[in-house]
Length: 421
Image (cartoon, rainbow, N blue to C red; front, side, top):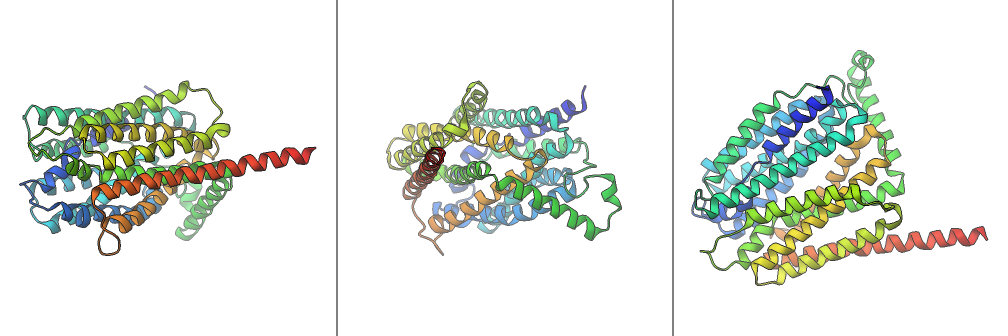
């Protein structure tokens, strides 16, 4: 077996295992249920925001040390953080313990950067696209399986919301054990690029690494095409993650029948499946995205905003479910286009840097939105319906930005044509 394929399989198995988290579609119901006895306001205002802030603070650190640590140690740390989080979810009792585990959950999320960038340091450049596709498919498959499993176990009354955490906890243990089999990275992108670099002093090594990072950054973002798609990437990812985080509180408000069976697991599974199909469909669509990019980004942002506004106002849980699925499907469809278009126009070695920075910007924006809309100390502490109405308006704002960009580019192109005459 080729070495790159062996690494791809190892990564895919780990990615699949770490996504087996059947407790997540019902985590809000679990936290406000009899097992923890928290109020809805405590969870949305004092618990969830902690994870966002911790994720941002730790992502900055992880982003800087991932290449220096040669990836694998941080992948193992991600597994250990997952074990800690779900052990505390199972055996913790107090609000403070819940806030502490949210900080550790921030570690779990931040260290995913090492998983996503590992391939660029370990796999030859000619196999980047194949391994990226494999790992993305494995993650989506894990999420889909997790959602189906969660729904079956709860709908058939085989497990309650608390017991689902035992499966997640077990999957984290297996994923962590599996991560130990990943090959170590001897030659990383910036700090351990060549054997000659090992002979440099620490100061010279840092100077060389940051000089190369600066070169990659400038060469990537001086390209207005890359900058444009990266802006959408960051804005849309911020919106999607924020909606995903606070979707369950909205469903709890809409679903007034506490005895009815929730279908959160089914919804997450269907969303993941549609997202996977949407991502795969990109390879069959033959179009020039440089000509139609602004139109697609604008239309999808308008539709996403409309779906969120409808979801925020409906009294029918099935309508909100459907809006969320289509919203998520649109995001996965367009983010695949955006990722592909950015990757085509940057240096191969700068993939991890560019997408890491895009993620960081998205998280900074998410933190700002959380402070303004969710928390009561500095923001408005909006109820779930008002929050999602605001998220809908936010996506409409993204559409306006790209309509303006499209108009400016159209006017510039016509001005250039007129100059030639």
